[in-house]
Structures are given as structure tokens and as C-alpha cells.
Image (cartoon, rainbow, N blue to C red; front, side, top):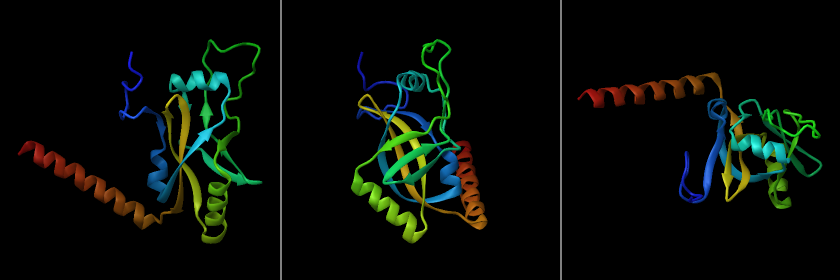
Length: 161
């Protein structure tokens, strides 16, 4: 069986696990960075079954390391009994030192926030796409909603002819 086929496959060895749609609604995402994720065995098996809740998660930068908080990975019912799974465990993001320093500078000096936007497989490894973002104001959210409604209406009009 070809590894590149499957649901959500882009043809380059990547397959989507979860997307954080709420992050796009709440923030203006300026820059996206791919980070690895340090996982345990039971977590990898659960991610293969897409048993993850990703919307309420956030990234914390501390002591020149990046951590993913609030990402819930539910264990499979067939998980090993000698390992006690913690679904809300803090997971370490794997980034180069230069990337962490640059992100820390953006957060400290320019007031950016770091939010996870997507989780996906890349050549057999789990990757998290994190974005440096600024919060949206209420009027920005209303404008985005208006634009989405208008594109939906245009599609309906074009479909009916």
C-alpha cells in the first residue's frame, strides 16, 4: 500500500490529524512554523485513530523550550495497563534554538501570541504547525464572518445559475 494515499493526503507524505479552526477566528496569524512533538507510544497510537482535541491548546515558552499545553489525546481502550496515560500531559515541542529565540523575541518585544494551528503526519512523524499571531478585535471577527457569509451566498447563486 502506498503511504502517500489516504484521507487528507497532499501527495508529499503529509496527512492531517487535527486543525485549530478557532485560532484562525480569534487571531491574525502572521507566521507559521513547523515543530516536532515529543510523544509517548500510546499517544502515537491514539493519534493514528485521530483521538485528539486540539482547539483549546496553546504554546508556552519557558527556559528556552517550547511546550504544548491543553492538547487532549485520549488513550485507546486497548492501551497498555502498565503505563498510566495522562490525556492532558504537557508535551515538549521540538524546535531549533534559533527558532525558539526568534519566537521568544516576537512574544516579548512585539506582543505576539504563539498558537498551534494544525497537527499532521510528516513522513511518519507527528508535526505541529504553530503560528505567531495577534488577537483580533470584535469588529475584525464580524468582518470575517460577513466575508464568509458572502462567499457562501455567491457559491449558492453560482450553483443555481
